[in-house]
Image (cartoon, rainbow, N blue to C red; front, side, top):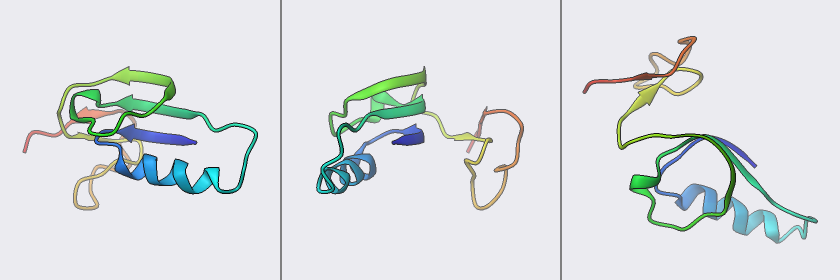
Length: 79
């Protein structure tokens, strides 16, 4: 399973729980960004690109109110 960003973890946990019902040989999590400071559910992230602090990021498909999704880089949005 690939996620662009994992922060609190409930969504990824829900997906893993439901994927396990299909009895795959294995399930591994790969995340571009890992916001571990906000994690409330322990997840076995096998591959992680970058651990980031608790900031709001945009770019590469991540947006804020439908904006900034198409940035060719990941940036921190000052709210």
